[in-house]
Every structure is written in C-alpha cells, then in structure tokens.
Image 1 (cartoon, rainbow, N blue to C red):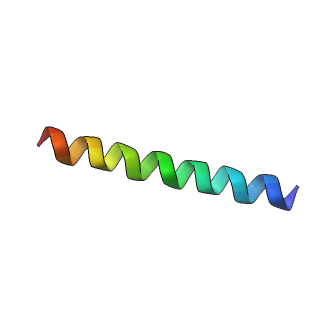
Image 2: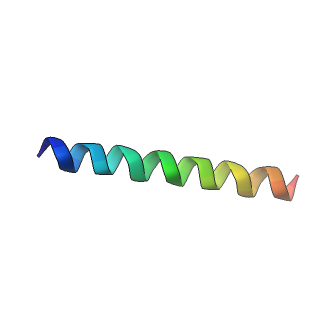
Length: 27
C-alpha cells in the first residue's frame, strides 16, 4: 500500500513536470 502511494506520487509528479514542459514549449 505504501509502495502504491509512492508510485502514484511519482506518476503525478512526472505528469506535472511533463505538462509544465509542454506549456513552456508552447509559450
């Protein structure tokens, strides 16, 4: 359960970073 939480947090962080990069590239 703790491992799942860690994976979810990592995925969310990676998603946010990727979304931010896309935003920077567009602007």
